[in-house]
Length: 136
Image (cartoon, rainbow, N blue to C red):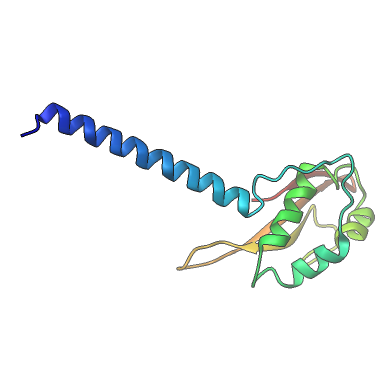
């Protein structure tokens, strides 16, 4: 019969292996979904046609729109640009109200079963220049 101390050690080892496996699974899922792919911002050219297509379909498949929004933020593609320049790059924002300090672009849907919400890329303006871009 095994001692209580040995059983505790076996349980501790099993839990450690389980935790390591779970951590690796989370990392693998992130990498496969594009979550960890680095972007070379110096050579990056924003794919406007892909952006337009991804934005039209983001409620069915939000992966491409979210990845492109992440690239906009990561590469500072809109910072310092005028409203006209941002609109030329990203198109018209959702629900545009002239003079709004923030523009939003739908790029995804939360994974809540109970009450899913849209996820947005948000561009904040000050003195007609983009000063911040955020995405969830």
